[in-house]
Image (cartoon, rainbow, N blue to C red; front, side):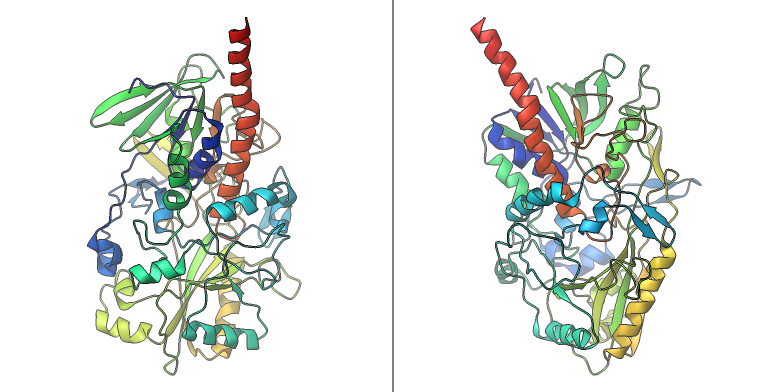
Length: 513
């Protein structure tokens, strides 16, 4: 572990892997430290009982609520991070999401830059993740400077029928932008990809799309099983001087000119707080007292429509979404959120949350169902936060904007019933489900109220960047992965042009002298 790279990246999820892909062509020596290991192919990848009933892949990790009650958070630690299990929806935030937006229970603040600033990076991220999609279907779709490189993932016949029914009721279903090579996926397995792990079978996640691109360069290396435990500094608000991590039972230190923290919204905040020292008693990068605060976790519910006359023959199902209620309730009221198909629900999946019901009954039920995911914005609040108590990670979270989410669910229930699904069941997801956690180390133009500048650089430590869902000032109401990836590529270019160029210039001057 005597290596001294130019850049250390902590974490190989969407943020870390994408910033690595963006920085790789610079020639800088980059080392990625990942706490987990590769998910190697195994029978459990396609075994829904193993995934959803036995929780085979779920780490035995415990977080705590403010009252001391323990819970299992459902985060994953492996190469590629949580994206190994994600639904591969790679959607852009709406233009309005970057602006101040009034909601039923408060205001979603403006980002420190506009949609137009990030738009070119959205296009680059879509190319990197080989996104399949279609323009001009979604009434809220913002401007795209270039089309998708690949056509949308097609609806299966039974799902095409549902799309037609909803269109007949005045809605505008649109093809979800998906990072899935559908032909390759179906050739390898007859399962959905949503919440299902894989090795390299067609889902474009942080590993298969971005990390593999980065590792194609000789100057990029990956160390797995390396759990970072602290960042070190020598002076108040000085640079990060070392990264301390545990591997194979031993503690190591590694030094680099730049450190990019991409451990995830909860773990990145926890690491900065645990790295407190005599010069930084409240934790690193925390002169604003905002590290860990403003935690957001989408308000989300499953909405399942049942009809005895409908037969769902789909395999993957997850191919369209609905944004008719995204910017308002469709009657000039407050924004409600996004609706999108879930991956195809089966009896084995339902059994995981309904253990007392026989699986054969759940299979018969699910055969006549179509399954949706309703998602609404959770507003930032400084009292919703991540804190640490020794080795404990403590999460304090009270939902915001929940009444708007209930309105979204009830509105869509009514539409589903009118579309021929007389029974509609709903179930909210709770904090045990990592529904797009974000916001704990937010960006901003004022160092007094935000730990990071608009390029995710710490105001307190000039060689520290935080590039994961932590930087997000708001959660919006769509999946955050593409926005994280777009900002990661934007940050990578900034580092290449500013920080790495400065290092190169200094080396050149030294040689000339």
